[in-house]
Image 1: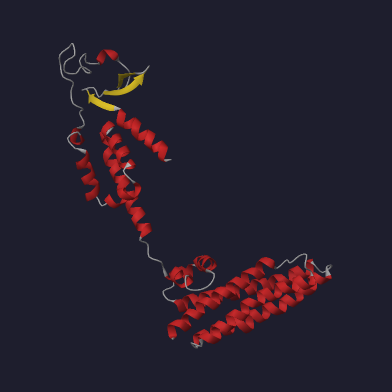
Image 2: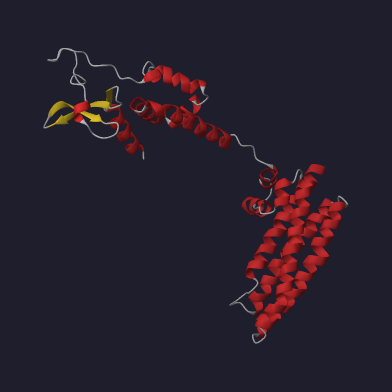
Length: 299
């Protein structure tokens, strides 16, 4: 990528805008090596249809040539009188100097070359650069929110952030206790849905005795997770018994692993509840971690 930018910058810097006539035609020159000899190449970019008869005869003449007239300076309007330093100062005053230092001077050279060729593009290029630098600064200085701060302290940061950001209530939460209630509610919802799926799975696998037996035992585990552990954890949370709530959340999540072990012992080749068991175990771990933060805050 850097080589491509270097080639582009070199091409643009070697292409010099000599001037613009009254019609709007633009005149360029470029020095290039041809057969080992440095020669100057000249060409015109017409505004509209190509009409060679409309070109002034002395447009490309320089001082000392046969016609004896000096070529016009490039008619760049307000940009023509500006030096590199002036343009760079505009960048600095616009608040993007640090951004330019971070990305290097290559982009600045390209923008400058483009602006020299097409002056009307300069305001757009400048605004684009300012906008890009502001977006970059915003992303670099973005402060972590409540979810990121909370999840960074406990085990399973990525799972914690992913789960909490999937719930709008968590995104709007203003304190850790709200996050604790939300994650426990997600635990209850997961266990309740799974409990509702078990009868269907038992019917589906009724001809497979070991799988059906494992599902029957998992139904018991999920009932305990929902009614005994996660709901009681919510109650203890309201009573500010954070240690008890933390332990209950831990056991509730562990029942997902316990259910999975039933399939390992009964039917090691297949577990129809594997995704839900895994989710419950992860939810329980996150819930345990979030509730533990309340204990730390309390102490």
